[in-house]
Structure formats: C-alpha cells, structure tokens
Image 1: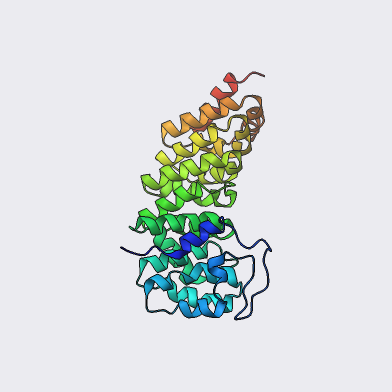
Image 2 (image 1 turned 90 degrees about the vertical axis):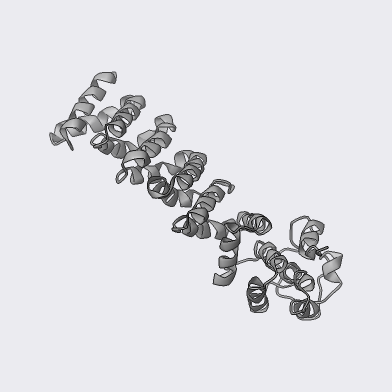
Length: 298
C-alpha cells in the first residue's frame, strides 16, 4: 500500500493555518518553534532539509510543508522546493503544491509552473491541490490565472476562468481578461468566463463596455446580456451601448437598443447629443436612436 504524504496530515493537525505567532523571522538551523505541530517540532530545520534529500519518496514528501512552517527564508526554501517540484514522485509534487499555497511572496517560475501544470493536468489529486493552493494565494493567483486564461491551451484557459469565478472576493482586476475571453475564446472557456463576470456584477461594467466596442456576433451578445443584467447600473457604459446600435449584426443592434430603452430617462442625454451632432454612426443607428427617443418618456 502506498504511504500517504505526511504533509496532508500535518496540514490537518495545524488546522490549515500557520504558527499562532505570525510571520516570525527565519529560524536558524537546529531551532524549532514550540507552537508548531508535534510532528514538525520533533525535527529541526536542518533535519527536515536532510529529509528532503532522502532516497525514499515517502520521506521526501514529508518535508515541504514542514520546511515552510519552519522557515520563511527564500534562500533556504527556494532551492529545495524547486528541486522537489521536479521530483518524479507525484506524492512529492503534491506536497510541494500544498506548501506553495502557504508561502509568502513570489513563488518563482518553477513553482508557478508546477501549480499551473498540475491545475490542468490529468492527475485529480494534483489538480485539486493546485486549485486549493491558488485559492489560498489570492495575491498571486489572480495574475497567474489571468496569464493562464490567455493560454492557447483550451483546458488551461477553461480551468483558469473557472477558478477566477471561485475566488473570494471576486477578482475585479481579472475583468478585462475575462471580457476578452468572452469574445474570442472557445465556447467552454466563454461559459466559465461569463460565470466569473456575472459574479463580479457592476464592477465588471467598465471592462464589459470596453470589450463591447470591438466585439461582434455571439461575443457581443454575451457582453450585452451581462450588461443588461445590471439594470440601471448599465448607464455607466451608455457610450458603448450607443456604439453597438451601429452593429452589422441585426440581433446585436436590437439587443443594444432594448438595453438602452431599459435605462429610461438617463439615455436621453446621449441621444440628444447624437442628434445635435448630426453625424450618427450609421443610418441604422440613427433609426434606432429615433425609436429609442419615441419609446422614452420625456
């Protein structure tokens, strides 16, 4: 029977949190903080570093979480974790992923790569661990997931969009990338991006309006659907909605028109401005503007 990595049991013993004493300075070799779980406290940092080089994979898998608990020094942790991230044992890589979710600061390209590759990889245990690590490192995960969202690999982009929809609080900074994915990515990615944008609510409106300016077809319809769902708050993107009245796709133009009508009186000012300028974007837009004016009460 395969031995389960001790890192998982250590995480449970600690209740998923670090030392009660907060972020202490790096510990010298041979010293152990008394508040750490007993299984970690039983060995010094020097002993855990030696264990990370053990020939047995089960022993190597015990070290990453303990090392993160015992030291915050990247000069100590970085080389060890980067080496273990390339370990041939999935158990060892799993332990590194769990530890990476508890590290502070930048992870470096090797650990970032391990998280992203595991996140979309075929091994369910590694994928779940990577998902948990990314959710635990919101300061880092949004930037990593936005980068993955732009990856040409559909599985990676699809999973990145899904996880961006799960992060709490919802990551407003990812809205532009999610809106872009809604107009250009494969359908499976678009569905997850739409869900993430829906959770962002009104905070996503600036990104939705900007993406609408260059969108067409199904992408434009999806953007308009999300904008329309915001009700009166969609007034924030009225210029983009007015621009969509000129869309070549009649369905897009009609949905834009209906959305503007739904805004009521706030839509009159931009319509008056268009009329005063005397230069509508297109005859179709001029006709739509006239219909909107007739539908809105003065």
